[in-house]
Image (cartoon, helix red, strand yellow):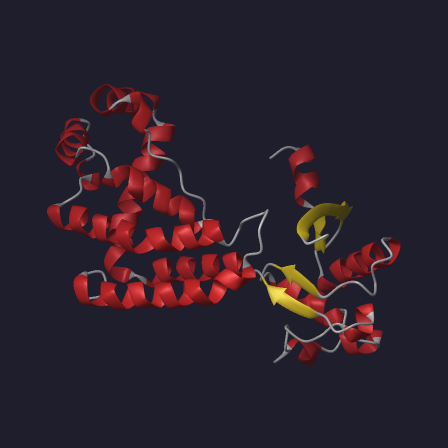
Length: 267
């Protein structure tokens, strides 16, 4: 990492968008995008948001604030509720806080802090995959196969010759569980006998998918696909999505109950 990359990692980036209705039509605008150096503390984020709200003259117009679930963002929302700086420094302040409380002291009107549903879903699925011990070995194999394709020019050449250049397995991102799904989907759609023959010929027998692996792979893709669809649906930019949350949760719950009965992932 060079000095410029190191400097960029030290900058906090805060983007603020506003969403409203005008003549019955939803509108969205980028209100502010700021960067500042130093620790990414909740206090700094709170100060930045308070300044943006004040400078934009929208103090009395805010009804809800939606953020991700990062601890510093939750803390920032709590800081906005406090009147005393000394209370902010109390370590016990952050225990058992109701992050969905109103921001009356900050913006002068009843206002809610709403955690982003798509991000909440991301955290739930990410943790679920991490605790799914029965599939841990399979997911590790798929990740190692993707890394091998991207890191070894020799293996990638053999892979493309055997399976086609348009079937490269994408890398996964630790902070985006749906990248793991895309990786699993790609491998599930490959010709398994051809893939295993390639791995055997190139001395990568440890990555060969067994019959049990292949069956488990198909089940994982089937289970995770609805979560990806729910994530995409609730990230819509030109429509109101909060009304979709309850139906989505009920649908996912029903799908999981069926999956418990019909798949081996949970056994």
